[in-house]
Every structure is written in structure tokens, then in C-alpha cells.
Image (cartoon, rainbow, N blue to C red; front, side, top):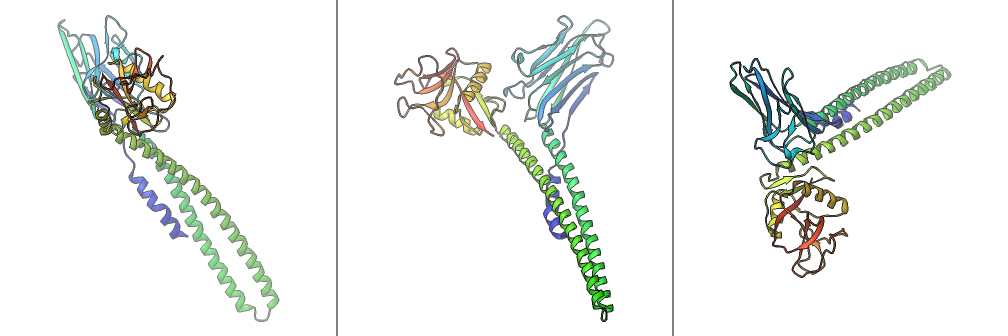
Length: 406
């Protein structure tokens, strides 16, 4: 029994223990200015946001009065590692303001230039960025001589692995409990072996003294047999109960590992996206959506190849909820009126199929009067000024949308 349990559990314990990772929180202070970047996590250990806090010790920074606080860093939708203004706070408005592009997004801001110390805090309710990036805090004001003065600091932030860490901490706790249970089973087995050995000795004693007392020996043997069967029954019940418990715990570990594997796969996909070419959506139904940053004359084969280089293909709108998600995405990003999809009727007029999979286009609601059946309008776009789907010439200028499965 000892050999089979160790063979089953010890390799699993060793492998899972090797998967544990650690989270780092970036923090930097310079010339009286302090910039802290930390990650938040949901109850399942997944990254749920990032907090950027800038504060200034006016005495250490040799400032008599603070006029403005500004925070710079990367923005949503894959704008990249460039330092662009995210929020500012000044003594005239007194209320912190987000950059125009962040208004209405999952970013909130708080701050007070007259508090001690003055501070400006952004809470970003999005998964932590997958690539290495930076944040910068700039403080402008006046020194003790009334002259204009400025101090700043920058912090580099590595990709967060907090979701993995939190999940594997839970796995490690469960494994520790399993290890204790396995130890209890081992101890019980040793105790049973001792009892069985003792019973064997008693059988030998009875056999040595029963040559003339067959009836007494028979009675003792029956009693011993009954005791032995009772002990065996108790052992079997205990082992059966423990095995059921162990099976349930192993199922929980398996579920956690599958979730961990999905998170890791998502991170690897994010790292492969060309963020210089595409803006990136949040996750929807296990997929990401990429929107080209610049307008160009549409070429369906070339656009699909660019999508493949980032792990996807020209978007395939499988149902109305997916279409509505993509429409809201491009309507928020804008920068163009036309956003090309993978649907087309190039091969057969009026029979729209997706370029990558060749599957037929499902029933969707088009813009009024569309498709209008003109022979050369062979590609399907999302036209913002129409408020929906439209068939149009395949070589016209616009942006295009990719779909990346996770």
C-alpha cells in the first residue's frame, strides 16, 4: 500500500510545487517624489486591475508649493510603451482629470493637490499589461524663492504573474493537506501490520497449547477470526473514505491546473500580437479582437495574412452578440468610417462566406437596403455612418478587424 500511494502522489506534488511563481510590485522614489505601481487580483487570482499612485514630499523635493501633478504611461487598446499623458491635477481646477481618450473607459482617478502629501492616483480596472512598460510622474511648482521648479520620476514595470501565483498558492495549500492525509494512511497501515503480526503470534500460541483441548481452541480461533474480520472491515471503510476524499481533492487540483493553463495560453497569445499594427480589445467569449491602427486600401488576402502573423484571421461574425461587441469596439476606437470583416461574395454573387474558414455568413441584420446586390460590391464592412453592415468595393480605404482565439 505504501509503494502505490507514494508512486501516485509524490511525482504530482513535486511537479506542482515547481510551478509556483512570485509577483513583483514596482516602486520608485526620487528627489521627494514617489511613484508606486501595484496589481489587484480577483478572488480566483486573476489580474483585475492596476493602481498607479504618485505623491510628493514637498520638503524633500525642495518645493514651497505644488501647482500640477501629471502621470504618463501606456493607454488602452495596444497603444504601446510610449509615455502619453494619462491624468493631471492642478491648483486651478482642483479636480483630477483623465486624458480625453480615457474618458468613459475602465479607469478612475483621484487626487488632491492641497493635501499633505499632494497625490494623484489612477485605478485601472483592466488585466495587467502583458509587455514590459513604464510610468512617469511629473510635479511642477515653485521653490522657496518663488521660482518655477519641476521634479519627476519614472518606473519600469515587468509583466505581472499574480494570477498564476495566487492560484498556485491555493494548489500548494491543497497539496499540503493531501500530504498530511497520505501520511495518516501510511501510519494506519503500519499500525494494521503490527496488529496482524500480533494476531499471528496469538495463533501460534493457541496451536502450541491446543493438542488436547480442541473445543477450546476452536472457540478461540473463531473469536480471533471474528476480530480479524472486524479490523479488516474497519480498515477497508477507512481506506475507502480516504480514497474518495483524495479523489475529490485531485479533481479540484485538475480544475485549477486547467484554469492556470488557460491563463498562460492567453498570456502567450498576447505576447505574439503586433501592437505597433493593431489596437487590442478585451477578452470576449475566449477571443481577442484586433483593429488595424491605420487606414489603407483594403486587400483581403494581405489583411488576412497580417491577422495570421498575430495569431488570428479576419473577423468572422458568427452571431448577433458577437457582431454587437465588434461594432461597439470599432465605434469606440474610430479613426475610420469603414471597418472590413472577412465576409465576401467574391466567388459567387449574393452568397457571402468568410475568407479564412469558407463558412457561410449567418443571418445578421444589415443596414437598411443592404446588401444592395451591386455586382462589384463584394466585401462586407461595418460602416459607422450607416450604423451597421454594408457591402462595398473590396479595394476601398478603411481599417480591418482580426479575430484571435485563445
